[in-house]
Image (cartoon, rainbow, N blue to C red; front, side, top):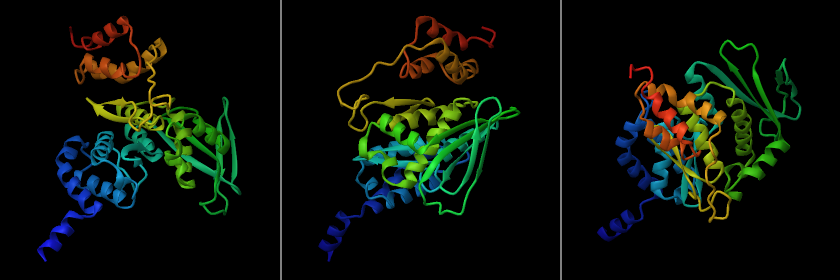
Length: 319
């Protein structure tokens, strides 16, 4: 009898084991989560996604913990509501923000609204770009499970006269996936039609987000999304995403041995970075070294640019 119980305990199901693992992780989750989220709900959502994915059950628990912490720090929930997903790549898990998560982050800022849609055979769909853009979509009677023909994203900055519209055909989505996918058949968009549609809608949305007001959380979520497409994992340190190359056994070029040096930061790119960092540094919420270290994971900074970042921490404070 006792031997049987011992054997049974040693063969504890992956779900039961993961549930215990999440209980131990809750204190760390609670510290990482924003005020509108709680650790118990986050743990339940992670357990739900884990229990429905045998592939996720094969992942290293440490990588799952890292992915969950990334989701928590972004303020996005994994799984059922589509804000983001715990995606397994062999034995490594990463958190991939979904288009619904990106939409939610834009809405939280209160400065803009964005949304996306998928067009299918039988729908009435018209759009126009240029200086008088519009997008009209009237769904037909076809089942939502039928393949999409186009996807679109629309963004509107508060009080702006015109919307920003992006439309992608199915062919354009597939071409984009073939060009930028660095994980081959392991890419989540290749698993089924629903995942391909989610990927497609996010592709269009990411183009629109280039013209929307940004926040640190949105910028981090976009970086995490791009990293996942390249086969890289991410961690968040001091509120900034740090990309980890070779997370899934591939180098940046896909060979596993090459590593591309970051490009030189152009004046235009530096101006965009200023929007994210200047107010944090002037408000003493972040230190210059934190900004410089985070930016250097993406770009090579000139000495003049580093001096400018340092100067932001002194401006507006009487120094």
